[in-house]
Amino acid sequence: MLNKLIFANLTHRPVRTLLSVLAIAVEVTMILTLVGVSYGTLDSTKERARGVGADVVVRPPNSQVMAALSSSPFSEKYIPLLEKQPHVVLATGTVIQGIGGFDSVTGLDFPAFNKMSGGFTYTDGGDPVNDDGMIVDQYYARQKHLGIGSKVMLVNREWTISGIFTGGKLTRIGVKLSVLQELVGSPGHLTQIYVKLDDPKYAEQVVDQLKVALQDDQIYTMDALTSLLSINNVAMLKDFIWVVIAVAVIVGFIVVFMAMYTAVLERTREIGIIKAVGGSSGLVLSLLLRETVLLALLGTMVGIGLTYGAQEAMKYYPGNLVQETVYEWWLYAGGIAIVGAILGVIVPGLKAVKQDVTEALSYE
Image (cartoon, rainbow, N blue to C red; front, side, top):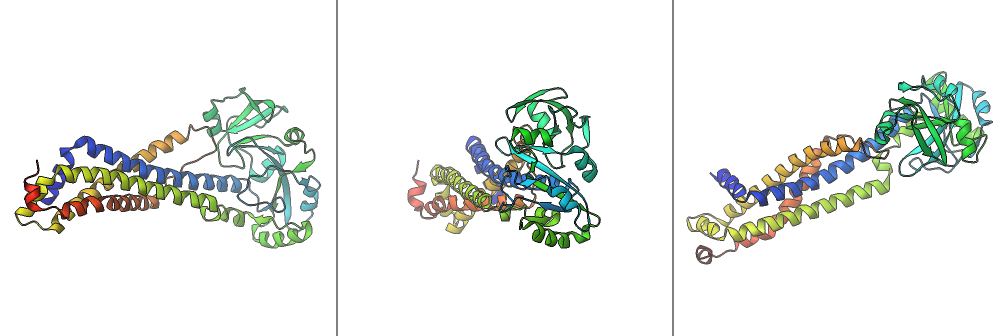
């Protein structure tokens, strides 16, 4: 009986109910989209790093793991030096040049890189042959509407797309190493170096040796480097997620407060009747709480659906962003929506409980 009354109350004002559900859904979508992009972007970075096939990574001194790299502090002379170290079978370096947002162009020695990683898997075209050749992954190509032979203006130069490859290996945009070195004014220098060993089990030992030999503390095994690529190691991102959660709770609070306060005013006579026939204040409050939780649950389900729409739209967003579906956050987002909704119903609920039966029955 009570459940029927709750559904009747919600369907009595369908527009208000729909707007409340959509507002809570937007709140849930905000949380799930931000978390999904955070996890997706970090995990895609891990995937590209592992795709290189290296066991050890040599990064610039004093650099931060999560910081964008753009300088080229290493001389190419490091390559033969590294290849003389015990257990090292191959070393190759890259130059990275940021182009705005999350995107960057990577210059690489294609023969050495192909030997280390097995090369890119192309859906069309292949490695650059000419100095103006550029390869891009299929996501970047789709975002920018590029095909083989398309012209692209980046790093103050026009490039011709020579290959489109599947993602998950080193970079999204690649050009010849020597060409990018000249363009950024760092001929003969590298941003970071990848090292492949004869057996990955010696990775920790080689890292210790290289830190002494190169006087550089930014040398990692690939496993150690990728383990650092997590939300917990990005303080600003973690703080931003909490800010969005706080905003989401406030949105839920305001939406439910307005909806339920109006509902209580409209149902003053109904509340009076419930009390007149013996209904307790707890029963009235229970009705409002159940109605509120139902709104929050409906909003959560719609919000999850909208998140999939955002995920699909993200594939066409002009930036190096990837959104994952983080299922465990469905429960967190739903819980946050319910908490915000319950906070919003407290004041209307207290108003309903305190209503005088006589005044409520005479309310028009």
